[in-house]
Image (cartoon, rainbow, N blue to C red; front, top):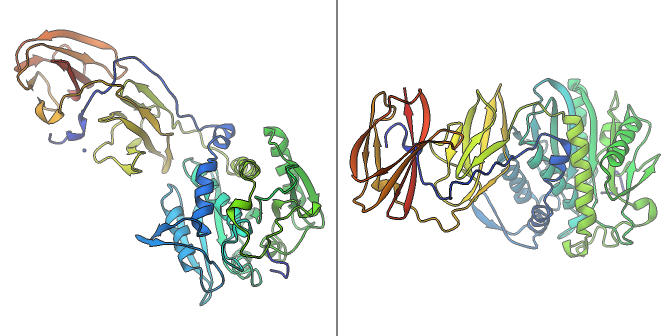
Length: 465
């Protein structure tokens, strides 16, 4: 804030290990309601972002180690690159580096609405500073924007959300003014701008916060909507309405356009003289912030932006049957993800996926041009000994009559055939390590074949046609 305007063959991925006792466990990664999304706000992640963007801890930017202590004008390119990398890692976002002058860079991420793409709602914050560190002013707002983007980008939405991170707020609101002027000239249908500036300090622990508003466009109605969200979801916060509110932050760039846009500022309680005493100094450090208060504030803005976004009815839930995960949305395209490494699993593009090792997994579901990502689901072996899948061969896939089965030499073994729901259709002892099995009794489709040999277990997939 400124005071002066300031996946052996084609089905290699179908070979997967069974790492659990076959107990049916059904779990849902439901993120279909506003409450679900509120619960995704992660104070640990927020705190890490605060520490990385203020240089309290080192980070990596463009593949290189970086410590971002200072974000003053002309010295914040590393911070801007950090923001681009973070936003570019999320689904459903188009990220633009808006270089509007020799030294100014706005970082803009757009999540296009599926139903009403021309209806635009903005959540924004400035990322530049006047000194070293400057955690509350304004990495508190910046980290909250990133957190809302992380959460909402997993959803398909009705309206367009813009996540905007402004530069040069501290020297005259230059970044936001450039964007707002361009938007006004283009006739952009911006329906609301939620500006976050200094939202993590609560010195007297009263959980007060301010909404600064003036009678521009529908700004007062926007203020009322935020208060309605506050009351509906029962956040541990108390609102102070400041009207007329300050013009000393980026929301006012939208007020002073012709025509004006609806905008408000949300932040800590300056109206009660409860702003950080370290304002505009290098003593504005993460250690001075009230993290439970900050978490609650971030939940509030997540709830508000979700109401404005509108959630499209796509099922991003997952059913778990042992180590077998099934996306519940039919007729889509799928990509399974290793949450432990945050990477796509090569070839894991079927609706059902058998986890090969212990870990956390999610699925990216795409339908109708829109992508949603499930929660990460934990799969645990709990001591089940596994058989190396490279020592087992099941072919041909797909098959019409027989499966050729090759196993390592063993003393005692058993085979099961299961359907996608985990129901055992066939169970028989096996004594040979190389044999053929007649599949003509099975309908066309995808099945699991489980082998237990000498105390070790493996599960593979096969297809009948």
